[in-house]
Length: 203
Image (cartoon, rainbow, N blue to C red; front, side, top):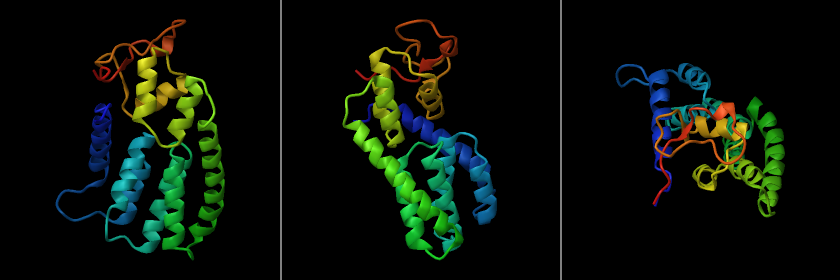
């Protein structure tokens, strides 16, 4: 059972943004350069990931174009997108697809760093952590619903960085959310004023 159905709403919103930004009228697909530019211009990193994934779903891309899109998504997932396993998979796919491309050398170096980062995150997950640290670790491992649900259930206010991630990924809304205020136990924080969890906790 999906414990956080509003995550699907966030995905739908990202798809809508990507569609509006990249799809022309009619059945003709846009040139790669045009769709790639539109995808990389999306400000929300999670929606940018969705736009790049939509681009990579095309079957008409040349190996060079696909490698460029894979590198862009891998770099995004390694940094702002917070999905180290996804980044590793993209770098590996790029190196198999286009080992002779200029991007391959950079991808190889970044793959080594990302694998080291991933191993450190996995080792950290095995240790006892505070909720903010556990959230940061699991989020960087590409998990979304579980860390969001745990924060909401805890009644503890998320850190500022966690709030940003949860907003961008569609778990925290403005005052219209159904899950109650994000402001939890402890001192009042001005940055949480008017923020609510998008959906109520599951029964």
